[in-house]
Length: 211
Image (cartoon, rainbow, N blue to C red; front, top):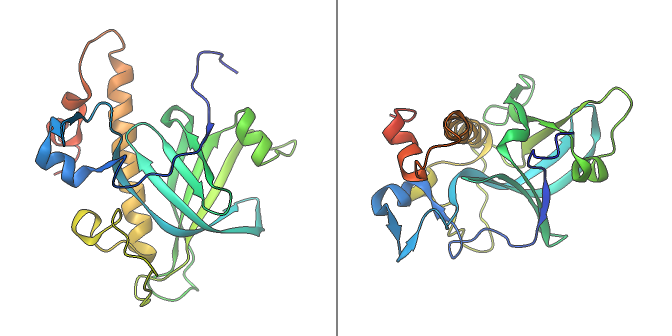
């Protein structure tokens, strides 16, 4: 493993409206948000609540109630029952996309496939087999696009104003678009490692990534 390459790490602070800013809000308040530079405040591009997490190679072991946060600096899988999460850098993302299950009911046919480079933490949490050179995670929404599900508490982070309809198949599509945007931003940063270009200049609207 390249010693200089960023690796996954444990995270103990869950994203909230107090410590991250939704991209939709960032666009309206850049370059400052409540007096703080957004270079210091992670931007939330997408994600969602209540995913079932499983390994593509072993779909029978399911971890329920996983939250996904697609941030400007990393992808965070959060496990409420453990009080912590796994933060993975974008340089570890090999592939992302959707897995279609046409036999499932309408609005609940897509799962998000995330293929990652393995590192010590991922190996510890998801032990590899001899043939596994990468980690293939499947994130399946607990609820359909059309399910009437109400959280016991109002979700102030993944709200309709900032993320629109964010359930079932639409949540998977939203998450893939968010990951694609963040990968593009990080690829632009990596292409000019010696420049002093600030993150403001690399945001999607200025680069034409998002219409």
